[in-house]
Structure formats: C-alpha cells, structure tokens
Length: 187
Length: 187
Image (cartoon, rainbow over all chains, first blue to last red):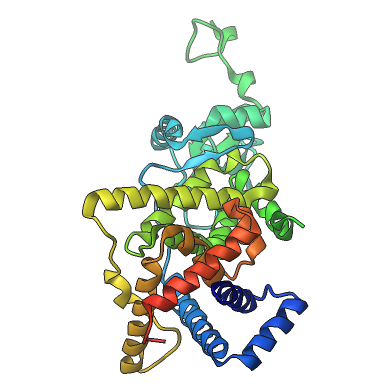
C-alpha cells in the first residue's frame, strides 16, 4: 500500500516537473481516473507548485543592484593571475601629482583651437618663432618631443592656452658655451 | 548532452569577463542573478541576508573568474561559489542570532499594478509559502528552489549539485510531501 502511495507521489512529482515518459504518463492517467485520492493529491501538488513558483519568483524579482565591494576589486587576468587594485594606487597617485605639476591647457571642456600658421618672422618665442606652428598641448614636453622627433617649446598663446611649438631653427641661435647675450663672432 | 553545453553561448561572455570587461560582467549579472539568488535562498533559507550574500558571490566571481580552468563549466563553478557563500553566511547567521526569520517578506513587491489590499493578501500568501519552504530541510529545499525558482530540469540540478538524477527526483518528491503537510488546510 505504502509502495503504491510512494509511486503515485513520484509520478505526480515527475509529471509536474515535465519529466514523465509516455509510459509513466499512461500509468498516471489510469491512477487519476481510477482513484479520487490521486486526483486530490494531484490538485494539491499542482497548487503547491504554482504558489511556490509565485512566491519564489516574487522574492527573486526584488531589486538588486551592484554595489562597490568594500574589499576593493581585483583585476581578473588569465591563467589565474590576479592583481589587487591597491597595487595600482601608487601609480595612480603619481600620475595625479604629475598632472597637477605639469601646466595644463585651458581649453578643457571647449573645442581645441585648430592648428594655424604663424607669420614667418624670427623673434622671441613668446611672439612665436619663424616657421613655427601652434599646436594644442596634449602631453608633456619630453614625451611630445620623443613622439615628434622635433625640438619643441611651450608658449602661452594669445588666447591664453599653452601651445607646443615646433622650432626648426632652435639650434642655429644657440650660443657657445660660457658665453651669453651675443654671438661668438662678436667677441 | 552535458548541461554545460547548453550554455556555450555564455562562454564568450566568460572570456570577455576574464579579460576584464566590466560591461560584459554587468550584463552577465543581469542574466544570471535570478538563479544565483535561488541557490543562495535554497541553501540559506533566509532572504534577510540574501542580497548581501549575492553581492559577495558576484564580487567573488569578478575576482576569481580567472581561476576557471574550463569556461564551459562556468555554471557549476558559479553554483559552487554561491552555495559556499550561502553556507558561510548561514553559519554566521546561526552564530549571531539563531534561527532565521522571514521578517522582511512584507517588502516583496507583487508584479504589476494591483490594489493595495489585493497586494497585501498576495504578500500574505507568499509569506506562508516561503516560510514553509524555509522550514524544509536544506537537502530538500535546495533542489526545490532550483526547480521552482529557476525552472531547471532534474539533469541540470543533478549536474550542479553533483547528484544522481534519481536523487534529485527523490528529494523533490520529499520536499513536496513536507510542504503539503506544513501547508495542510491552506492549499
């Protein structure tokens, strides 16, 4: 008798979970036709399943948002290597300090000025050199010089922005060592 | 066919996350948070700390995803992380304040726009059922929640829980029997 009850429960459970074979489905149908208790059990379990799904679904659909993790994120890498974010902190601080120390362009938030030619006239750098060209500052002097392979100087333009200027004649006006103020051939 | 092969579409996402793609990770969380919550609730039987545990689980996944040897086995891997986190949280909870409660079930939001009284009645229904599910022994509650919250098949549940399919079936039959007894007169 108990074995029959257990089998009936198993068939109903499998039926509700969509796991019945066709033979088992026939067996369950026969039981449901023959036995009113089987029908009641089936109805109870069907309602139980529906209510469980609804309750669990309502719980699962509660709000859930990603929050910052107190321990600090790790940067996932392949092959199981991991780097803790705080190792990156000294580098980030150094970069921030460098950014504060290096003169920054004033055009942040506004469109950068377009490159323009400057009158070809030799003179002080603040008036811009001959054959020079204004360019907006995007990096520090050494890195720009390395990138361009040219001699550069930074000057403040008429609009208040800082520009790197390509200077083609820089070396031609350099004075001999130990001298100042006048070309060597005048000494 | 192993359950993991059904989710091969996600292996590309896993690879992206392993490469540090945070957007891929956030999308992945959106897709899979529901069943992770199901695992946590199934093990813990407590919604009070469910969100916190889920946070820990997802933070752990982000941190440790580089440890997955076979991206195709991501589902089992995440299941184990979620389950272990829930077990740890359960131990901590038991140590701190004893038996779990369902005190915050009143915060469940019924789907859709429904009248306040109807919503209150529905919340009461949900509370009864969830309390009954919480009262299940953990070995029955876990597969029951995976089945009813996530709609997983016996085979899927067996694979992530590392059980035989027959064992899953037996546990589901017993879970239903327990629940029917506990909700007698309310079905």
